[in-house]
Length: 374
Image (cartoon, rainbow, N blue to C red; front, side, top):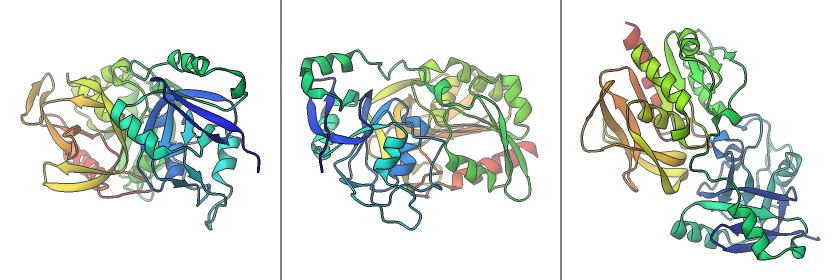
């Protein structure tokens, strides 16, 4: 078999040589690694990975192929994909096509055959950074040429990306079984797993675009409002922050996940900051401070809320407490408002392919709506 040579070039000048995987061409994004040994299809179709080149730390990827049931959205969103040893065959009863075929069909440029362990260690030392994958006529150009193209690509800090992945029009997702709640979901890049976890609890969802006004959100979310995950720098999401402040003023029950946690944090007056490496994978330990329980959770975030973890903070919306922390580095993983019906978490309780330790948070949301509506 003849392979097309490919390069992965990092903005600090590091170069990794491999072979093309998926589509051939060039692509740019922030190089980040994820530690999951499974769930690659869910990772690829997570809108939060928009404008990122994702490196799989697990060496063997693609053995279960691609099916038609596990997508988290309508398409693959990653800018590029990096694996060490792609499976030569797809072996699963649900598989419809190979990972390589799906990447090629959706024009996603990847690279295989590089030492992803060495690459991950490099990023662990230097931090997430811009990168490019090149697999077209690379012999004709110099390393300096590729490096300059990477350095001229967009930064993640300051990137306003939610509008690129949000729905353009509102739509309704009916409750499974009897309807108990009417909730507006602000789509900043929402995953299908969130829709499933809410609707199976009797929630009818009106999914609204990121551009929706506070009045439109409140009209659609009679019982509560959900703020989704999504890509980019939360500091740029000024419209969503302002809408969240109006929701808090209206005393509507509010639940946010991932980017939604950062939006709620900024809405009450906290700052956000870019993590050096970010948290990505399905094995992150988080402490629920209200119960003392440690959960193994799925993460995908490069930004975090800057809030004191050892005290309750007085804000314009009452008292706010850090409800969850990451046990690896004490990063804020959740917020709860003491005087408003609102809370959020930084990680993903809807996680697919798992784990499912934190699914109870969706029940906590329905209980909050019951209490707030009583």
